Image (cartoon, rainbow, N blue to C red; front, side, top):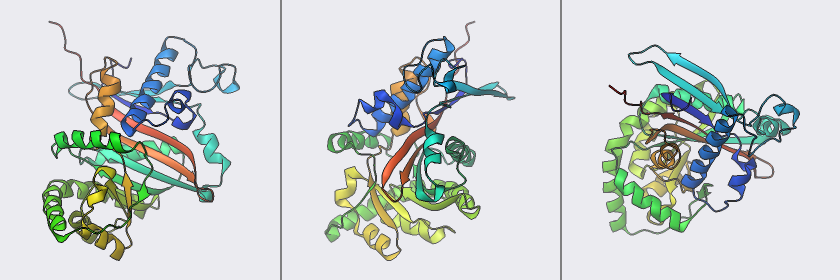
Amino acid sequence: MLKSASKVTINTGNVLNLIDIKKKAGQNVTEELSESIKLTLSEWSSVQNGLPIQNGVPENSPETSQQHSDYMVVSTSTAPSARTETLVNITRPHDDVHIKMAEEERKNLKIGVKIFINEHSTSALTECLQNVFTALQTEYIDNVILAYNPDNVNSRQARNDDDNVKNTSHSTKASPISLVNISSTDGEADNDADARKCEAILPGIKVLWAVLEDYVKEGRVQQLGVADVGGGCLRKLHAWARVRPSIAQINLASCCVVPPSLHTFCRANDVQLLTHADPPDLLSQAAVKTLSEAGVGCNNLDWCARYQVHIKCRGVLALKGYVCKATIAPKLEKK
């Protein structure tokens, strides 16, 4: 069924309870996402063939009395078009996401979501957010960070940056940046690079940001953040936006040369400056390592959201998972 679909959404559920993920401590972000998708597809394939589960709830559990797997297709839909599109939604309905969410009062939980998207598509961003709300069954999200990396912006250089990240850190948790002294010469160079990148990405960010602002207005999202923009671009977004960014993330690969303007602006405008280790080409890398290697024609995920749920008073990470969508290349018809 998967190979005959044109689009597929994958909800990995809580990856913290997957045994195979736990055994591979220290893996980087791309490896974790790829492994999570791989396990989800593997278990889904098992239920299609009536095989026992490999991860998740035991077979004798009441929750799985009528299921052979922790994964299942929850819906399949088609939409009329020039070429009929089939959407398959794969999820893990029996993992412990909802159990963990119910263990604490919502006010004691902090939900953070980072959205990776390469196109300034409002419908794609809305679809992504709706899938996250459905996965967590929550009325609001504490913060959403937008990671917008269009394919035509430094895509090849991004691969080199990711290799550097792999060699320097395996952490996916954002952390505050220590202030550093940078010479004026370095600052000018960073400003020039920032200006070039900003010209390419700011129009798309604005399109997506307007969607996020509507969620804030409705009370469904409380804070907004943006990843991998320089001080000049952040300043322009801050001046333009109705809901101003309160979080700015920068990649660990470049944290030692943070532009002074970025530090200055964040301090003056109460913007929290954090680091991360997510590669810019995460969507293409994860797709190649999973769907493509599995024989499914796909070289890029349409979008992906990573959610993390912390218990506020203890700072404990209770939940972590991914929700992604991919467009699968159609098979060539034999003549």
